[in-house]
Length: 321
Image (tube, rainbow, N blue to C red; front, side, top):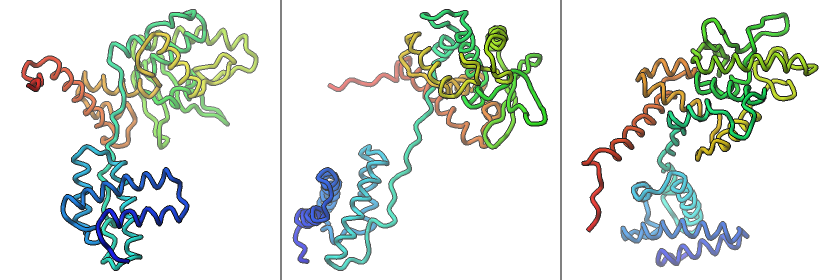
């Protein structure tokens, strides 16, 4: 093969992809990613056959500096690697210059937490279009209050029993201690922990227990162990609890699409904002490592930064002239 200019080499490669009967969409995507490679190579006056490992590392860094996300950079590197594999079959190359070059680590999105006022409104206000005293609504309020009060995972919530039971073939994985106002759950890794339950959640739980007693009395075969029951008397499932919370948020007109884990994030963020005690939050969440809990310090800083930007006179951005 006779190498001329970068654009010609690129066209020859794309023509070879057509012979492999790849879809037009795939070839078009490869073309865009390789156009980026050609532009970067041209900017440094390097022919494609002379691109080195160092060049590729610099190219990837330039893409990152432009704000391209890690996933897009990784895709481009993959396309470039395929191109140089093909080029090495046409001419002699010392090695594939893309081998060993990795995209920057993908940034983990911060967990979404509600503002404190929105969280309180979500768990405390009854559904405006439902009977607040209906058993299902009392169950909902108890579940939502407990999720926010104690930062439980949804699986931990629905796994709760009305009280601790230990029998020949059954042992409770979680339960409420009404005397000490604590909930005990079995979390990840079968690790058991106890978390305080706030007064509003305890009140909602007691109201639900009265309705629950009536449900068990009238529904044959109702689950006598489960704390939270469906309208059929079976143990509440994570999916049903999730749908109920979403519908409740929509009925209240919240702009955010709420889900159970958002209340766990809100619990952690708000306790950390109020106390600054990262270790205590780690224990209450049941995190094995403090690293998993430290993400909430970022949430707290993000909130402070927003307050600063909105309130500090020297934080105002200067309008361009």
